Image (cartoon, rainbow, N blue to C red; front, side):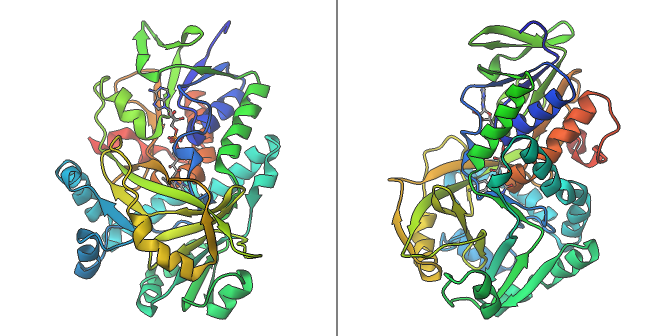
Length: 414
Ligand SMILES: Cc1cc2nc3c(=O)[nH]c(=O)nc-3n(C[C@H](O)[C@H](O)[C@H](O)COP(=O)(O)OP(=O)(O)OC[C@H]3O[C@@H](n4cnc5c(N)ncnc54)[C@H](O)[C@@H]3O)c2cc1C
């Protein structure tokens, strides 16, 4: 490249959206990844643009719920015993952030991002020629037990205060929306403001193609070669070294591999998750993603089939997959929806990069001029990618930021 204004390291949905936003501002951008765009975590999510989010996923409430997880009976969560001591400080912080008062604080702090999530994607998708990938049909959450539904009361109240639309449905109302669901639940909520994507990898690829059309360059390279040379940042790529005055790290769960050696320690953990595609039996189908709240899995209609995504697994990012949650949840999933044969021989696994306060890090890297961070989007990396791209582009180009970046600063952990 003749001139490079910015390096973006990591071509998941977050890095690709950042690169696209920077290119839209007229910057010459190199997007560096060791793989093609969208092949890691951003490949395998449930495809939900959760602009509706009020409360983040929280630490289990009550001893019974905790005991089910501890005894490995909960379909929604799993853990590797040997990993627990390593993740214990993070879990304690996560538990503290799951207190009702702090959940409300998180809801308010995150609203400026979530509230813009769908519109920001819609705008990028329109210019990337990818509008057909989006469904604006909401996200249906099902409740088998009256207690589980009753536990959503506070969240619904806060949603109403924030002006977030939900329709409260009984079983018949939900089955009017999704006739293929079996009557194994009692209550449902349709979060009408959520949208969903029929192929998350195709979305990242579409943003990458739009980035290229604007003159952006995608290059294969190992981000771990990033180093400072004077006032610039340099990375080694398959096409030789590339350097620029600004570099953005958007390596999702791998970001700590880079910032650690630069002396930046941020308390990120990973929540691993799995998916598997299934054929639907007969004419069965879904028009929107469906969460089975009591069992902690999601069924999302994708171009590849019905994608069943699991809840969380606490384990080392690089430990071999242990998809035991499927054994615990498949009877419930088959009871809810007529799932046919599995499409792949084995499940896919990805790692959600998570901070205990359920906020991403978006902003400058402490003590490293010209280095920017955009990672840690947890359960909402797809959701927040487009607004993150805009915010980082505002910060890098010194434009008035679209939202106040202070709550997302890395310095909050000091
Ligand atoms: C089961 C599951 C379901 C989910 N469902 C949803 C959902 O419905 N909605 C939602 O919003 N979010 C969802 N998420 C979360 C979402 O998928 C992630 O937050 C998001 O994909 C993170 O994107 P990213 O771009 O930060 O990371 P990634 O997509 O992981 O991208 C990181 C990139 O960095 C590259 N990289 C890493 N190391 C190096 C290196 N050394 N050199 C070069 N390149 C490197 C990788 O190859 C990769 O391309 C889900 C996650 C899981 C696991």
